[in-house]
Length: 450
Image (tube, rainbow, N blue to C red; front, top):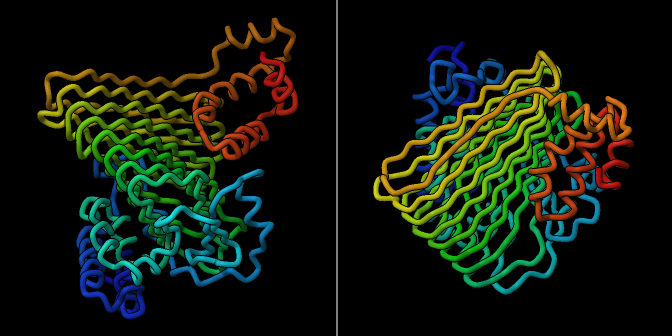
């Protein structure tokens, strides 16, 4: 590598970081970090020549030197967290500022016996064997260069463990706040969520930042859902419009498990979300939903992959996008039905609403079917507002601006209404309404049932 190589700064930083990294005294973790760093050094940043990255250039990230973000809890008030949280939220909350847990802003209430909600570093000290069994065993960094960077450089993150047969009635909220510095900074948050056999839990991840500084958020979340367990997961991304956000979510499902994941991308300048799920046993069910709202010159890329590796599993996927201004979006979905995964039932849908002539979206749904007794289908649509629907609403007494705003809200509501955490659903609805030209009139129309 030369001095101009964008990998060099990370290689140099890693030689210093690994001596002070969490778990530096654990041989297995030290070797894991080194393997991840070696993989990133050999592979480098992805380019447009690669199929999975051909629609999203990460050159702005590669050519910027990001420093690991320093601790920055000073100056962060509870009011800042409340703006990110949801009005009326009742549950357990861990708050990380620039990638490090702030115990003063966090609050975990009484938990059922055996449930853990704490820092990943604490879990590493308290139960290293459990962490070793799962950390970086599911989100493979050999194919994902940003996951490799995260695996090498993570310093903090959340550990959630719900033991066999236990239900956590309140949602668990993991909040990641970025406070930009004078120079570009990066945070590699790492989350490990274990939902054991027959357990039930809800986890919400929120990512947000403020200020005019340039920053990069590079999280990885690994989820293992045991047999007959029920898990609801939400990721809400509201980064500043100067921010970069590259996130990986990897879910492993056990026999007859039920998983719902909802990806909500509302902020960021350059965003990439990779959502990967794997049916490891029979009878699993998955609902994969997403909503992305893109404006200005934002770029949001959603990549999903569902591996039906076992028979008798069901997946339903619905991603919807609203694009305005010069916004750009990518949906790249892939359902893989493995050999002998008979009786698979899979449906994938991507719908996009363009509010301006300059907005652009690439929608690439895909099926790879290696079994012969399956029911699989996919669909994609991209279009502007239906003028007949606008005319109908105007005939009901609405002006044109209100009619168009109401139709936009209705388009998003199909995904929003599937959110089961009511404060989060209300916050999403309010956020979408606040960005519509006729928000007050639309609110009135929604209440009146138009």
